[in-house]
Image (cartoon, rainbow, N blue to C red):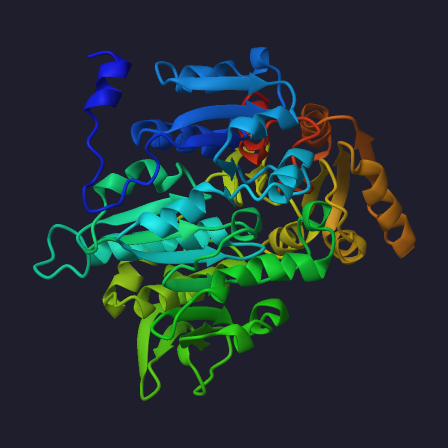
Length: 479
């Protein structure tokens, strides 16, 4: 069966209203989110134009992904004339709302949305939304594992028919919308880019932490916090919010909670339902009594920040009615997600780790604190207009050797020099990551940890953090 016949035979879920028939939809951004939305819109009868700043010859993968779909392409620029034939604008996460085309659309009163907004408006399932400056993907994956354990085929009584995990992690779930029912549970990772234009909140909304990030996009910390706060803004009295009571940014949103409040943190608290640490155990407090969930020795993930991620995942899972035993089953044995403190190999006695996901100094600091071994630290990429002072102080204390690469190398070196420590480790600067790997191979000693934890984005050299991590892994394996 060819692609067009398959498209024509697709039958949208009759329980979900089809509001897109013959709508003229302009999608800005042809990456993963744009492609998923284009498929959805075509399958629901819309007339789709896909627009991207990249020239058409650089969008071959996107075109192949949509081969056979009747999509009109406009690539290489964002001409305002596209608005003349648009009923609605769909903005991919990587597209800033300050783009002149988007600004003009607002002036003309053309509705602006994204795949997350459309999904939340139309899914019949219960939705968990998870956001934060760090830990979103790990926590989302953990909640998915906990939910899958509770809903395994061996269980006679399953709390949900099917579990769906996605959003900013993996594949956007909008293409799975027609297969969802009211008896399903959706677990969505949500970025600030996806949240900033939402007019609907998930039924269960978790904010893990809020620390400086993406200020190159949002401009100010206040605007960034406001974007994160959107996840709570449209909740109702029957909905649930889960907040980190030990993070100033997340806890600062507690006055916005409209429904039930669950919390998590390392220190015990009987004032709020949620999770905490008691010695070597993770405990759940339901407001009346404590329930042991799992010993921390069963957490295979490195770092104090990952204990917080487990505390969050358990609180989220229990807030949606999953049994307490499923927390232990879901967490135990989980060794992490690719590019997040991922062990690559041991070479000449040194252990090499890939933490390419660390695109802010705060995340690199969390990675550094996960190790006690001497560190050969690879840092750099593209800066997001974030402060590096605290990172510099910690790096000087903990690194045996610092290798700076990419556009941010000079700014990071200035921050290191500003600290003015007499115990400054050796510093090497290089243009790109491959050269940084070669330098690391020359200076690493047995017993070291060689850690890629950039603190900057990948966009000066790579398509995204995943490509950067994959290249790092390849270059390390080729040593």
